[in-house]
Length: 294
Image 1 (cartoon, rainbow, N blue to C red):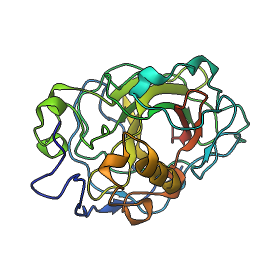
Image 2 (tube, rainbow, N blue to C red):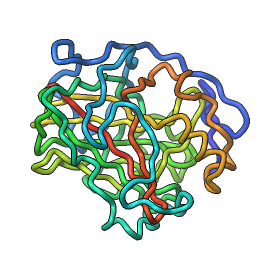
Image 3 (cartoon, one colour):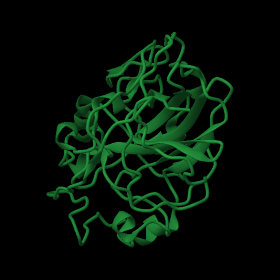
Image 4 (cartoon, rainbow, N blue to C red):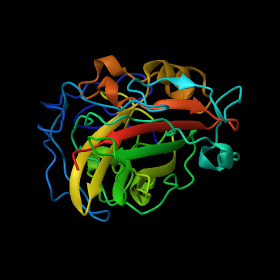
């Protein structure tokens, strides 16, 4: 696949990239939530969204559910380095710990809202969203709760992000997201939806995203309850982890460091960072509590 380079603003290149200027919207809270009812279903394509977040009310407490992103080698983790080769390398997945074992208390601030973005497209109901794409394998664990920290069962959690080369997939995504690349348009990788279980949990098998010009590394998500849109936002990784992956991982280092660190991204907010831990097979376990105004 060719490396990204875009017409209207510089998308991902290995040498240099330009910035994207995006307007902002305020973060959500129990009383100031802006996401409306009537969001998309798991089989419809989205349009270009406006803006992002200014300040965050973000993540919840409890064991494995802290607000700031960090990387540890906790229970289930003993590998010396990160795995390669995509989700097929998750050979010890049965031993991965549940990151949501601690009490959250009774007050979970609602995570900030951000733009849907222009790269939403038709999604599929599946746990493994990689379609065989290579990269650092990531087990993404999400816990959906209300503002009182009560789990929300049967919520749809929809995620989408780029592959290692910084491309979004789908022939129904706008051209700036795929750059009309044939492989990107033919695939639907790194798009998927899962329904939360009785404990409010949803899990995905994916890969660490690649970068494109003007944006920090991120994963889009939307939570829908009863076919109503309740939260659209983005998840991020700790800057130290991003630096490590793009400096040392053999599949990511050839692309060089992302041109936009977290601190320079107009959409990034600290409470959107995922907690992470390296597992015994070298895969990454990444997790986040998503509090929504249900």
